Image (cartoon, rainbow, N blue to C red):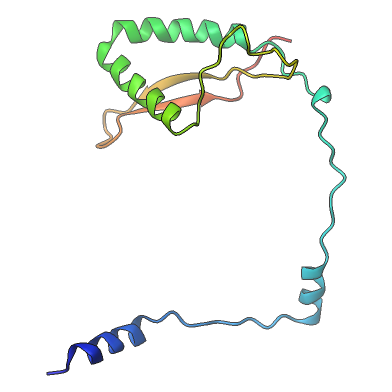
Length: 135
């Protein structure tokens, strides 16, 4: 019967990922050396995000009414939002401070989608990034 060391050695020889080195042609080498900075200058003053607050607020009021009518949905939704806050994917903004520094802001509407056929996560939240804002 083979000893443990030889079995482990044989295992690693079998499972070893082959080292593949690719030789580039002269043309490929030349392509790898050329990088061009594109003349894209994004100036925030060129963007007009419009008033997304009023549309998002109206949708949020509708969402709030829907959640109040369904306590189970409200509980699941709150867990999701709390997780997003913990992961720093979302932050609570004081409405009085949101546009203090004159920068453009966009309030993103969101709503729950329930899929009863899913085993693990029956609720997922969909963010509407293409919501039209008022100009």
